[in-house]
Length: 580
Image 1 (cartoon, rainbow, N blue to C red):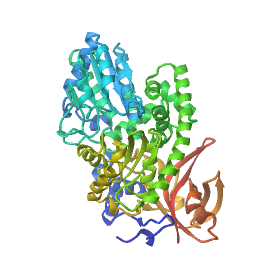
Image 2: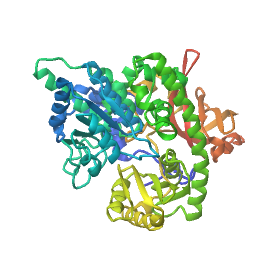
Image 3: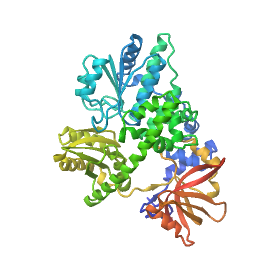
Image 4: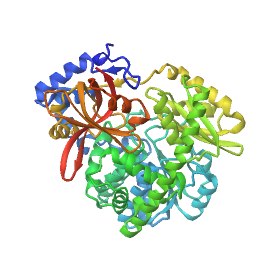
């Protein structure tokens, strides 16, 4: 494939890849049918949208995209058992994971139960003392005091802990990869069970919980009763979907799109307080969910009290919500400091071991379990290789991994665990967790690398930069951005369109802080366009643009609206550049 604009090696060492001939033809066909601007049509073509489907794609509705909950096994049983507990006034416990998805899933259930006049006990395990998922002592204690335990965002692999919950029924609402056998629960609702088709495998746990509540409401209507308003809960589903990096395709796209509208209404005290403490003054976008709100909700489970995030999301008192949000914001600052230290040590170790193999990994004494997943993500981004980072403590190590497109890390880790080299492990294609005995660390990582090599992980080169279209600065108007946004929301599995600007002259460049760069550019025939390059001086982009010396540059990145003082201006978020 010919490099776009002839760029085989950009400033960041990447080859630029433009739209294929087929994508260009499809974009033209969409433009002829819809009369939409060509950049919008290029975005739709990249998503594989047919011309006749374009109008519907730009206006997705839950009514059309929401699947029948009963497509998932055990769904009817789960919803009926929850309703039975509600009618009988039984004691209900919710056992949730400590991340955003787990917290949002728990908050969904708590809010729904509150509206039907029932309370529930919230239990979230401590990341360090208990680890991920149900454990025997906790399940035994909950079963002693409750009639029904609902495990959300966990439980699919928890055979022994669920068996220990004698005297209580257990329901699992999860999305993690299942094994060949299921735990002895009354119902295991999981689109990633081995006996499911996988068509709904892109749902996060909050999406599964939402579908269960849809089914519960349907069963209530069949009994002549009206269930709670579920549309008002979509802000939680949107937050979990984006923060858990679930692909924004199919029904997820509609869930997030509608959830963002609900969130903009500022009706949930916990999210309002969190937005305020994060100084979020504009309507939320997927970026804010993934990089502003999500990390703060996660901070409690990473370096503080595990239940803080879920308590905030379920909170109804504004004063309590403010106090929780402020505490989470403080913990998020602590998390950043811890992460920076672990990241530097992990990168140095991984570089010494070598970055060209099928697996990049690092393990360190006392590395905080709450940040190893974030650091693994940074290693993966830096190397375009699956990455695992492990914190060692005593005879064991607890780690987290992140993968690249086309490589199923969760299945590989589950296989290594089944072979006995890991104490436990599992997760998704793109993210997974593991526990390993210290004396088996090296052979476990060697075996994992072997399995990943069979999936082609060692053949991944520097990531190509995929571009959707060539654009002139004068065409980048707020109106165009609004039309492009209609093809969103953008995120995992549905990246925002990336545009190239050919042979541009840089007119102004100013360093912002230590590492960022603001500048403006034009092609000489129209207006200038503003740009921002975050972390530019951590790599080659800052020096290239600041020291352009009058030379023209090809620029590539994503367009966004910068709202300041009531004015809306377009700016380019620069990702790459090359000399023209």
